[in-house]
Image (cartoon, rainbow, N blue to C red):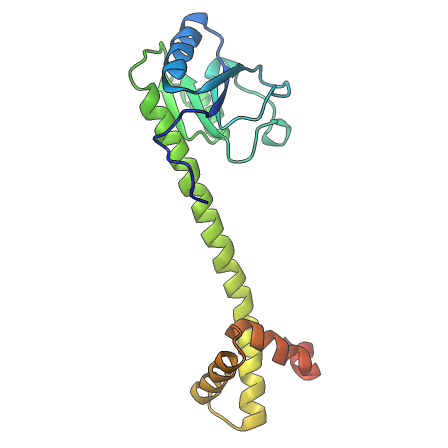
Length: 195
């Protein structure tokens, strides 16, 4: 299944937490043109629906801590900035926004902010997945190293020859090196005690 394009917004859902009615009407009009479904939201309350996007006015800041915010995982956050004071920007950064808009709002720039927000969330999720895979591989390296030491001692081989043997055995058994190494270490009580 392919991921949705950041440029295609039709059918996406947005929660709006905007205090100024003029700003809210600009956003509603633009979102309706873009095909984004809209629901109003008041920070601190449970959202009426799951959303892909949250547009929040900085006048609502500070809101409850991240653990109390009922936001869907992977929800893109766009903040509407009214002032650029350091204290206000600090509160905005606590939301980890994917994009921002400056008040008073105009229709120009809303599409770009939404696309950039979705793209940032997608890239961040991809990076998290890559980091998770790399972390798993780093943990597996310890097991591979323990299996290499085990082979080196059992066969009297140097490290390159032991690794070549481990790789050949994995290919013959149609397993990854990490899988075979884990099996070898699990069979050797001394390797388990020292690993």
